[in-house]
Image (cartoon, rainbow, N blue to C red; front, side, top):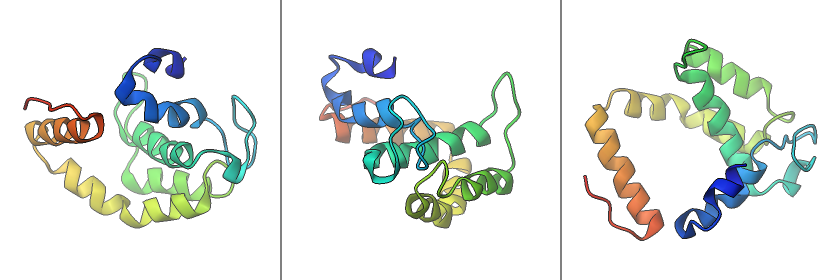
Length: 128
């Protein structure tokens, strides 16, 4: 469904593999295609880690945000099963710093940074 949503959107076209395959699991138990290991596109293997981490550390109407250490344990426990171990371990090395950096930043600063990044990757300038 995610791939259908971005179909025809030129600047999101590069995200198609990540969107379409980020539910694949490193041990071949994921979906939609039952891919395994390096068969899963690199962008999807990366997105899988950050997607799960973000879902676990974010507050939702149906669940509380998990503490950082608990969310990191979920990623660590998923190495070799859900996640590519090399990618998950690289992420875990930087998770504390990234969360500190973004968690302490004012909302308006994060919105501005996001707009700059969108502009960089889309080739379209974004207003602040």
